[in-house]
Length: 206
Image 1: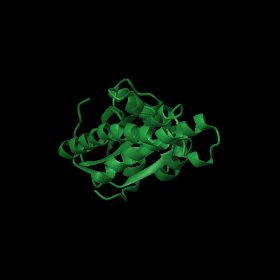
Image 2 (image 1 turned 180 degrees about the vertical axis):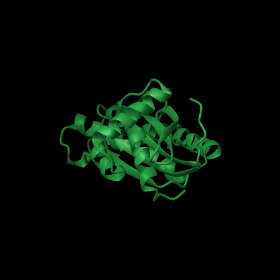
Image 3 (image 1 turned 90 degrees about the vertical axis):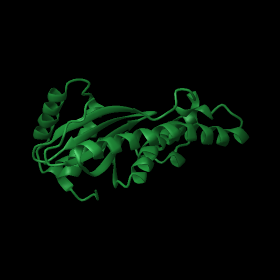
Image 4 (image 1 turned 180 degrees about the horizontal axis):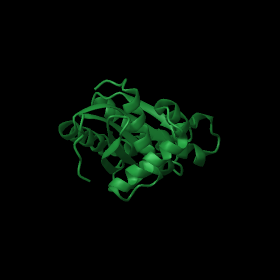
């Protein structure tokens, strides 16, 4: 998708991270009149290395002495795709849309894998941490501050940050989607809302 110029050169970047991929939305300011600058789906794993999509699941059936190596190799394969993908997007935004106030990552859960007894559910939780961690790693390498959010808490936090009733926030997100067209699914809305909150706060370094 083409990056549209931000009238005031202000922007924030939001990610809704899932297993092996992320929906990224950049929002331009001012926060009182936010608009979508870019919407993009990022690949966070290597299709040529199938284990990199679910590294911890890949290790489940392996002998204990081999599982650690499988996770390390698969994670590194994912990192080699995820970090450049995020960096490319950040660089493109900086060159064409002005300064970035920061970035926010929305994840599905913040469950600690170590507290989960079931191996299969623990693998899900581990991957639920891995891919947001890779995105945050890439953002840090770009010099961007990053806020982490859990999706179930997003709308409550947004209402406080924006000082708007939930209905007004919902209508504003829907209007953004109408302007940019599909896809405008729950993940794009979550990424956009997280970025909008950063514009309202304006506290992350450029």
